[in-house]
Structure formats: C-alpha cells, structure tokens
Image (cartoon, rainbow, N blue to C red):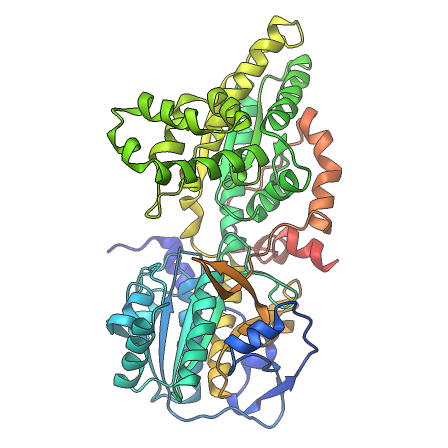
Length: 551
C-alpha cells in the first residue's frame, strides 16, 4: 500500500505527554481522593455495582513511584464507531507497557467486543504500531458494536482473559462501550478474577463528558473536518449567490458537533436540538423561523445561505417525537395487516387510520419521501431508524411550501434553490489533529499507568486540556461514579448518561448572542484544512466550546 507524503511526515510526529507521565515510570505516584457522592441513584447503583461503586478518584503526581514494573499482558478493544486518534490510544498504551517492562505484551482483539468474546486477536508489535501512529481510522484491529450483556458473553470474556493470561483489558469506546467496561469490571471482581478493566473516552459526538471528562477524543478532528467542508460550501455559496445549503451533521443524541461547527463557521442558521426540546418548538415554528430569515436575506438580494441541522433533530421536535412514537406502536400492533399491504399507499392509509388527530395532520403534510422513511426504514426492533431520516429534505420540502405561500401573499420576492448535504463519515476516520494526536496518545499512556497502579473499573482521564499538553492533569475516574439508572428493555440498568448541550452554558450563550446577526448578514468564516505545522494557535488549538467552558 502506498503512503502519502503527509502521512510519512505524520509518522515522525512525537505526541506530547503531560509532564507527570513523560519521565521515568518510577517517578509516577498514584494519589487517591474520595469525593462526596451526590447521585440520586446511589442506593440502586450500590446494590448493582457492589464491588466498584464508591472507589476513589486517582490522580498521578511526581514522587516515589507506586506503579508496578512487572511484565503485563493487556488486551485492547476498539468499540463502536470510528473516531480520529484511536490508533494513538493504542500507541500510547503500547509505549507505556514497553517503557515499564519490555517483556509486556499487548493483544488487539479484532472486530470490537466480539473479538474478546470469540478470542480472536493479533499481537501489537513495534513494527505494526509504527505503521499506524498519528493516523485516522480503526483499521489496525477493526471495531464493532457487539454489546457484552449476557452471562454467557461475560463468561466467554473471562475465559479469553484466562486463556491469554491477561492482566487487564482496555476498552476504547463511547458511553455504551464504557458502560460495558464498568459492568465487565464488576463481573470480574464478583467472580474473583484478577483481570482489570480500564476505559477510554471516545466519540466524535462529544456526548461522553461530565465534570471530570472534559471532552471525548475524536471530537476536535471531526468538527475541524466538518468546519472545513462547511467553510468551503460557504465560500461557494457566497461566490455563486444562488443556493441555500442545508447541511445535516452527525450527532444523533446531542448537538455538540452542530454547536462547535457553528462557532467555527458562522452559518446563517444553526438548529440546536436541546433548545428545540426545551422551548417546545414545533416543526412549523422552525420552518417559519428559517423562512423568515430566507425572506429577509432576499430583501438584501442575498438568495443564498447555509443552515446546519443536527442529525437527531426530529427526536427533539415534540410533534415529530409523538408521530414517531405512535408509528412505532401502530406497526407491531397491526403487524399482520401491515404485512398484507401492497405498497406504500396501502401502508400509509393503514397508519393514517390509527394516528391521533395531531399526528395525522403532521403526517399528511410531510414530504412523501420522509413518510416512506418513517414507515419502511425500521431497525431490528421495528422502530424508526431516526438517523436515516433525511431531516434536511424534510425541512427543505416544508420551507418550499411556506415560501410559495409567502410569495403568493407578497411577503417573499426571492428565488429559493436548496441543496442538501450530510456530513458524518467524512470526519470519523480523519487523520487526527495535533490536539487529538496528543490527547489520544496521553489517554493510552495514562491507561497503562492505571493498570500498573492495580486499578479496575476506571476511565482514563486527562484534565486542564486548554493548557499546553505538558500541563495536563492525568488520572482516572471510577466508571461507576459517572453512571445513573435507566430502564432498558424493561430492566433497570446502570448506564453512563449522554451529555447534551447545556443551553445555559457559555458555548451556547455565545452562539445565541451572535446568531441574529448571522441570520441576515453574511458573516461566514472559512477555517480551512486542519493544520499540522505552524504556530500553536493554528496547529494545537482545542475546540472553541472547550475553551469557552474553561473561561
């Protein structure tokens, strides 16, 4: 396989470590602090996570080393969707193990958690890892979305660990994957297994964060990639001056990507799902707001613009949420009749006969292609696959109708030429920014330190991330501390709660203060491509939202 010149140069990049992790392993000291718990689900969590709930926070400082330097056998898993920098997490873990004891081994379980269940792995060697340093993707060992939940699966994992004489397993993943890591750590302790489990916070969606986890890895690179593309489209729009671009951005549960890219590029409109839900904004209300901005810009002879839309918007619009819920109930309740329907028209008629009056009115007014997606694109449980709904086309269709009515009334005199886009996969496997390259490498090295300190049920944690990497604070947070109780498949289960955009936080308020001007005045910013060489403020800057949260 040929290697580009840029990738060859990136192989030579040496990721930066926090100062406390950059010296001899003997000089790293683990310090413990048990904070007061204020979790509403504490009693239930204690009853379920008997062995891991209540563990102290650990931080690493300089002093008489408390880390063991014995040879370790460690397994690593890449779990869930790709995020830029995953290879550097593995590189940091590998280098930490080898720096401590050259006889240590790192096994990469292939295809995600299924690799641990099925005992399929490759050994990570120096030659192999050198081919993947500072590169995007998860292709070194692949990833997967298998959930480890049944007693048989947990038993298989423990058998795999025993057969390979593993001391620890590192799970690199998002909130669900780290929930899996927490439950696995509990299971191993319950079964008197000495195998440790450590998590690493991954997801481009940015929704694995809390007062201890400042950001998930991959977010910085993904939003910079999307912002480059958005900026390019903005430049084109401002040149052609005749197209309205509706851009859906990955991020189903939370709008962190939409908010960050808005702050980086200054679109005319950016919808934030969390605000839509909090304000109980209707679909018609959203359409009216965007249409008003389009009409206002037309008055200024600017029949062009850019609208950013979070992937999961429809689940936050109250009447769409109700419609989806009703359809999800109707199809299984009428499954025999639904199966006998010949084509979409008959299916649509069946659904309409069973909808409430409010949902019926909405269903009749949405574009036909969206109605088909609501009925035909179902997951294995029979539910609507919300991520596949072309929300940008839904809005465009409704806006076209609204503008036609406004034109008939004399309230709109422009020309509306819409174009739809979806940016998602373009950012998931991009070559990591310097920030993500450093952050991921440090997370991996820090995961080694947690293992060497004899800990289990922790997530690798780095804080003070707006400072230079040498000043980052390293340590670990008990996974159980980050959990709450949710009802899943009819059972009460401990899960890591997704972090949504805080509409009372400084990042959102900064955006909200500027958006009225952006809506009518062309204020586009063109960030350009990710830069790897040059001044710190260009090459090593963390996300804008992270900087605002630290101010």
